[in-house]
Image (tube, rainbow, N blue to C red; front, side, top):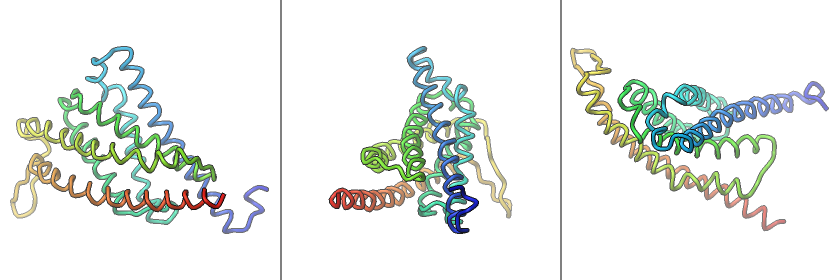
Length: 232
């Protein structure tokens, strides 16, 4: 039975699920390509591949992260069930690091930490988007559910540490070249390096709130899965 003969509310739900499935599929394909490309390059060129990671996959990484901003809209209008503030914190972290720090400084693009950070990001996103994509069409695997709700526990703090180290390594370059300085009203000049130093504090505070939210969400999801298994 096609969507045209369904009740209006079912048609709306059908369109929403189709849209979300396509969105998750695009993100999954993008992050899978990035991780596959990085893995193939590492086995082909060894450690030398880590230096030019950004040049090889930077464009696709920026596209995927730019598209991910749609998730804030998804949550706001109610087509995706999640909390807005924790997701906002996560996306802000990546936007600041990827566009504000890495993309704007060529010297940082060649650092090993960029490769490590991209590996962490893509591991988390591949699992998350696979789980979300299958959930939209009603497919659930206990192992995948557990992995999506557990993998972030060791990797997310490592992501934050890698992001902080990336900022730390970028500071001398921003300070030397005076890049990205802005002039605020009332003749108060604020340089980007000082903003980044302040953001380091915000980064770890945000990690606490995000980690707490994800941990609570994990307990709720695994509790539901456990209850369903007991009924079976």
